[in-house]
Length: 466
Ligand code: SF4
Ligand code: SF4
Image 1 (cartoon, helix red, strand yellow):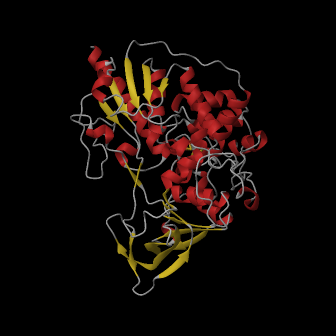
Image 2 (cartoon, rainbow, N blue to C red):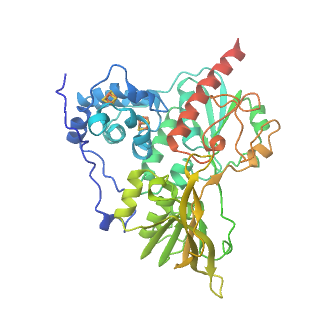
Image 3 (cartoon, rainbow, N blue to C red):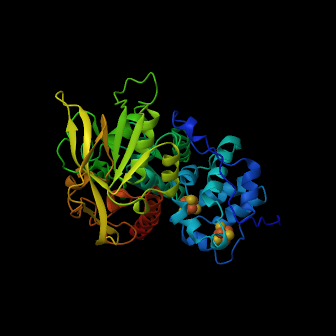
């Protein structure tokens, strides 16, 4: 057995220097070397009660994969990951480990937790770059299922069902698969080549991915059932951006974060020879404090903005983005205007953005979410000069599927209603998960929902067979 590493600190992750990376779209975090990974893996105590596993929404056998890394059996580690996740290189990069698996790690009590996400990323990357193992195509069980949406929840459900022998067809509305992994998360956090490879792994085990298929328009849920599918998983995400309904939101230079990031990521607006129109603003204001706001702000900086502001109505402590993303944004020069809220976007005679009027806020008593309610400070309005405003204040599910499917009910936020923890909707044989049910949340929670729904679909179809 390999000797334990009792260093209280995680092996640091090599990263591009802030002043270099804020001018390019290459990945910020460079990944562990082989020796770093082995060394970090040896910090794991292989705890018998496995508290870290309880913090993982897709139940990865964490101590088992890490033990294999510690013993330099990287292929074996990959096999353990592959039992539970079809997207390990993605999870290792974008999962909020600090509030999931790593939050439960016992090494975190007297020091830093084991770098579980970093090790997961290492194993997936090492395997992709070094293994020539051929995909194992599961034996068919003769049953067909469909998945709507090729984002994290849909791909997870598709992978799990394919591994159980189902013939799975994934219908994706856009021209590429990946959902938010492709259109939302920028290249510098999640390179698209890595997303594409993990999707290809699913195609290699027999999953059909049909793009440009807007369900509710090209086909309805009823028609998909008529094509012989015995169950359907809806993982269509939450792609409808929210706005604040303040004056000036229709001016030129105002974007939803969704549109801004889609133009950059999916339509490659960051490439110098791209024909995709995008605002190369001198001063950009991003409204919101989540990961999407950080992504939009850091992307605007990389497109050439001299000044980029994050305007958020609560304080630094309350920012919902991951700490790592906030730290990276600060290092890259993003200016945080917390405890501020926009009241109007200002335009010039030609209808272009020329500034944003904000008001200062202070925190009052906790609201229904448990967070302290932001309250306007009277008479504290001021203006920030800018030529681009990006709204990153959340998204809702698109109503197209629910409005074209009899019996599929939604709540007052437009999210699909599920009757149990496994994603059963109000329509027999239709399961749902991810942002379509919860509203915008994290990739790993969506994957967890896809996983439980896949197990429930298998049980549902098995019972019908009897
Ligand atoms: Fe941790 Fe996320 Fe990996 Fe699960 S998928 S082990 S929560 S990093
Ligand atoms: Fe290893 Fe931490 Fe999990 Fe214990 S809790 S098995 S130390 S990763």
